[in-house]
Length: 132
Image (cartoon, rainbow, N blue to C red; front, side, top):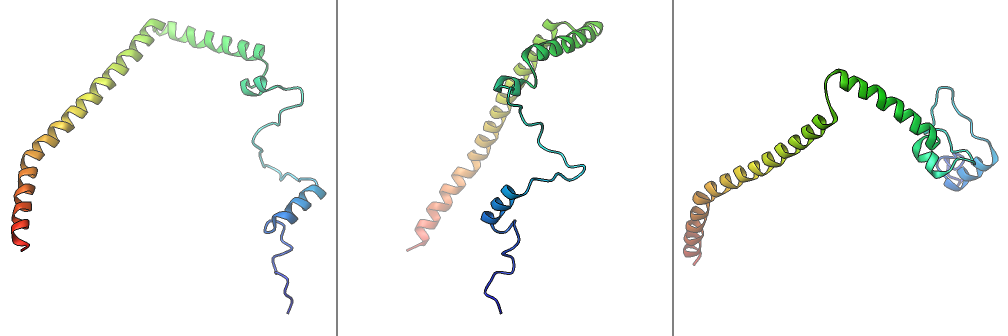
């Protein structure tokens, strides 16, 4: 019987053999497989990679989309000030609701503590007297 590991020739088990196999053979893509996205070309800088294109082309795309969305909002009679006021009102309601909920929770704790703390104290006193 051989002392060699039966899985030694499997490239995904041994990392050193995997790296040798990767350097020796080119990678093959399976049909229908997708990659994480196009690799940046040598002339593509970090800003273009972050923006998804040249700043000018991204600006033109954003300008066009803003025009279409703005026209739709104006057609629906929604103004930018209305949107900002709506966001501000929404945040104010969440703020008020959040602290109102904390206040309610605090009231529940106090109401329960009025009963629980004296009962706990009496039980502790009875337990100390019964230990002797």
